[in-house]
Length: 114
Length: 116
Image 1 (cartoon, chains in turn yellow, purple):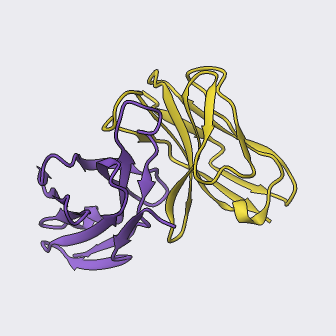
Image 2: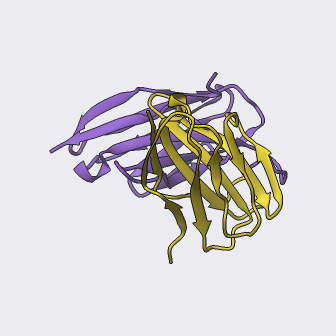
């Protein structure tokens, strides 16, 4: 059982380049989200989706795009990478419903923008 | 501005000792308070969680204490073991069967080191 799978694990980008972080889950979860983790700041929500075709912004959405064409996949696109986007990115998923559903995280994608 | 404030940033405890991590929040709409454990190079994993209708929840060596009036909650790790060395995050999310429930607000994290 793979759970939440993120690729790539590591990536170095030049300023201005674009790229997509892939996320897939095999638990048939409706809810998926992307967080970034920075030292001293915990994890902050970038974008989330409550089902295929539905996405919304989180706390720090600027510079990122998402789409949700299937239940399984939730890619995160960096449109024009900036050094401030150097971070560790985590994808997460859960059953939708009420507060208290366990949210499962992937293993992270380490992104460096030079 | 972080909605969940976590302290301390780091702590060192001897094997067999008690680790205590504290969190405070302001938003009274929060009604779910999980703790996540994260090992280096891995994603956070749910450790234990509590709802505000109880003041304490215990799972093995891990206990959450919750003080609704003070808007504070804490994690106690009893009989700390070297394998508990990790970063711990408290979090909170708002109530309701709406789209807002999954929006976890995380504390900044506490790095716990348990010495042999």
